[in-house]
Amino acid sequence: MKILKVTIISTLVALCVATNYALVGVYNVKVMDFIVFVGGFCFGPLAGALIGILSWAVYGVINPYGFVPQIWLATMFSEPIYGLAGGFLSRNLGSTDFKSSHFQLSIIFGVFGFFSTLVYDLITNVVYALTFNIPTIVAIILGTPFTILHELSNTAIFVLGSVPLIIAARNFLGVEKFDFFAK
Image (cartoon, rainbow, N blue to C red; front, side, top):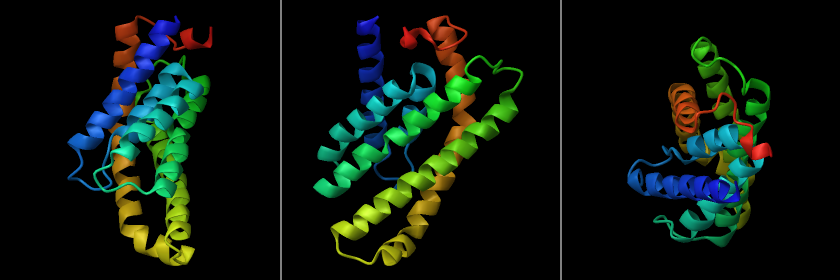
């Protein structure tokens, strides 16, 4: 079971890093947050948080936008928000029939994606302000267009992708509920 856990987590981390590079030209539109969220939903909050931390640990060091240690640490320790949110939702919705509740679940996932991104962006904007000695309100105002883009794109990705990917993961692994990591 430990080999399966390590394999799944490392595969999802690699997928996060690879998709970030694939979308490097599309600023603030990434699927990393979504992958971390679904990882948390499918494999538990601890696995989801670990996927988030490790993804930024790798991507942040070789970030094409540059390496700033304070920003790197803020993103690395804020990304687990998505995995924790996914894990929390799984505990409440994990045994739901996804095929018959597709629309309702998509909306729930979208709402969680939006608010998780809002918290993530608030934390990283505050750290940006502190790092570059800018008044926090100025950093938040200047970051608003990027924040809105990030929140809207994540909401759309979570709405459109969560249910199909969770159903596919269940089918691939042959499980009805993702509780095998709890053992």
